[in-house]
Length: 214
Ligand code: SF4
Image (spheres, rainbow, N blue to C red):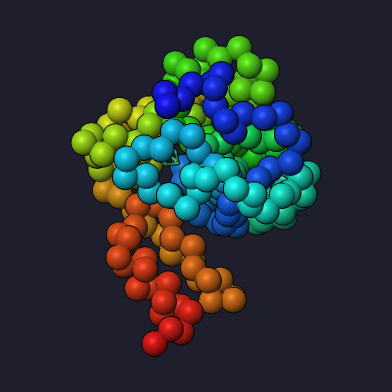
């Protein structure tokens, strides 16, 4: 199925966020230190997707934008928040609401999307326009494995990093690190969050070790 904004099966006007994952601090999902909100469900299905567990539109944890805003605003010394997935624009209404609440508290918003910049920025859908308006930095485009690249924030060279406001200062290209960083967070219950672009086999082994599997 060719997916665009009008036949996207996840595009429903819902007031809650269908959450796939949350990380209180990350330094590899946009500039600075940011909590990351991963939403459940993506209709784009890029070959080689880094988060295949987030593709189905199954129910994840249902959270209200206000409750998530409260958790994010309680984090110390963060630069803002990042929305990723899954596909954030399939939950544009609720994420737009969350983005607005966070920006009122002075936080900047980075939104990743697998839709092309044209589709996102030219959309007339109210929910999409709301999320675009609540975003400071848009990182857009599907992952194309044959165009794999070494930028720390994008997986393939077709993807675009687009400032929508002047709130987030991008590093100068000369100081912008190259290479794909990976970040591992071990939670008190022994679960592991791996983000960035980690090697899958390494993550699998580390997950077993964190769980104490023999
Ligand atoms: S847009 Fe992102 S989450 Fe969706 S399939 Fe592509 S890489 Fe995976």
